[in-house]
Length: 527
Image 1 (cartoon, rainbow, N blue to C red):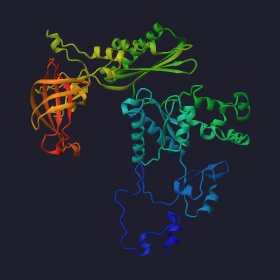
Image 2 (image 1 turned 45 degrees about the horizontal axis):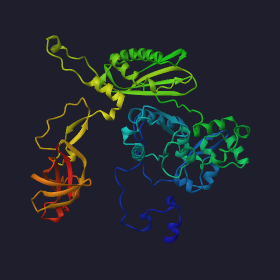
Image 3 (image 1 turned 180 degrees about the horizontal axis):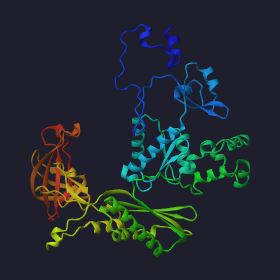
Image 4 (image 1 turned 120 degrees about the horizontal axis):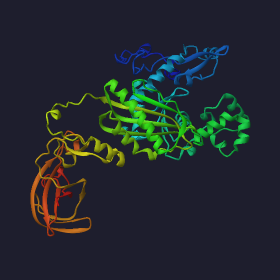
């Protein structure tokens, strides 16, 4: 009897209490089935123990299955099956009417969330998906892989089953997200064609007539289409199939229409004739910034990030972005930052449309001029200089070091904004040049437990110590990890025969082996 019960499908197996067992575990009170509200940003995860579910919609003159859960798929239910056939196949199948309008509204809310939190360019992709353009913003989320992992975790918390793919083109990403074997696929730049070659031709978003014609001629995968000449292929599958193939491999552009956030300040210019010179582009930038300054002033905001997109007459798009260290709406300063990146714009045959948006803004009030009018000396703001330098060498190359409340030397400082005002540095004697990671020393001669080294070798050279000071004992931060509970470092300031001064330490106190392995390291140079 027990074997017969286990042979039944999971949804048809009787509950534990019906089998005579009285020790059935109670379900968690906060994991019951919950219905999402219209305005909620996330969907509560429903209970996984339910009858097989299928969505039904009227297609033509009959009702067909347009969606099925994994449990229903295992029982033989598939998309396109007649609803009457599905009812006859599975008697307790849970049929619910499909609501494509509600699905579209949910995808639109997700796209708006993506625009505000992840990427300024997000659009609703066909077949229940989202397109995110990560160009220039993946480093803000810890890289492409880290961002995809966080995105999958977000979808799991919201109750969605998601698959993520990153590729050079929207078509390739669309195909890999739906037909690749794993939930996460990241294709290296230039490897899109190789990645989509083994996928079925249905991954190209072809019409049913094109798929039927491909099966008739024995075409099964995308790799079968690549070596075929475009002319004969267009006559057999249609011109739309050729366009989808070229879009997936990057031969022709596939612009996506991003979801616009109405709260983001934006201005636009449509030109009567296309332009291509740097002077004309700079003039359009100046006009856009004048309009943007009025919009920001009306809302009491200042721009921290500006994004300029220029549409070419051939359908291509050129995008540049500039950031500021402080919120501002001064058109002259922003124009100077944009002019630094004019050389990155490829006008092609000409630019006919410009759009300037401010994805990141902050409140900006009037500046207090009381001290200036009274005759006090105005303290110069380094924000303008920082913006110009960051526009030339990159925002990551401009920073200021600030102290951190930590006794461990490599954790006692961090990079902050160059315009931030750091706190006072502690009065510890630290080397002028502190290494990011300590480097090991060899050939060390020292007396345990408290004597400094008399000789050591570093980077292929031998050093003889003539003077030393120490030790300065630094304990590990036990609240971070277990290995630092008993960790000890004894630091010494030593000077060699040539006058060089170094900061070295020994791991361990020289008595208890659990405090360190007694190895010697160099952590910085004083002069």
